[in-house]
Image (cartoon, rainbow, N blue to C red; front, side, top):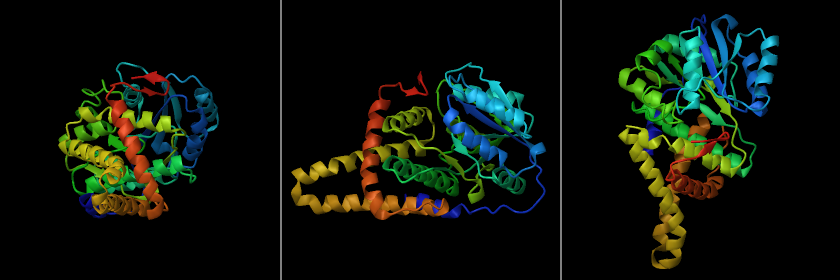
Length: 357
């Protein structure tokens, strides 16, 4: 965790500079039953500060059963932005990878950008990507994502969890060993995507359109995979509304872990599981082994302090208020959720957006 904190600082913050926009972007947004979120997403699209001739928006409908399609169709008729709506073509066990691949085939610009329908985009999002790409010449750009939170326990949990994942992501990039990326804010060259054969070889896994592609790109272009650490590029995503939704989402994320070939990621995953299992066990150990209670208290304090130092660093970048005292109960909630997710993952199946995988 100390190494990740050092890596976070090594990854310098990028400031969007004045210049002439040159990069064309095809923004791909797969969706399924997102009627409640699409209004906010579409409003943020209309506010994008980027020449309309240099980007297009491609919505990919993945068999929605609500009014999502009608909402997008209405905006298409009224907007001056080039917005398209296409239907997904299922060819694999991964609906999202199919949606992205299908959209890329009909895209008109060289740079592909993916995000999610339940997100909101900052107005200088594409502008910051443009200046970063022009200056650094990457083939893939991973960028920051944060959770919305209104202060409710369930939303604070997801925001802190998101900050921890962003801390690992940014820190690992700073250490020149990228471990994570987030499909809610990811850009890559269409040529590079074709050179690594897209999602071929991992499309039997439902999730992982971001991490599997990162691993392929990292192997093919080790020096051209970069993280855009810029406040102007932060995409905001909506939290799950129920604990069941959180657990199902995390099980979906965990489903790709055993398929990853990155030993560092595997080690980090095992470390997280073992430490959080220990955190749940410590209160019981304190009851049955009172002679060592001071040792257990020190262990708990070290865990909370370490988490705070890493999350606080990310919170500063994302301008999120973070309190040491509010983190204490979240550490135990996180340990419980992690343990439940691991147990449910062993079943080998999960449900997401009305589908079983």
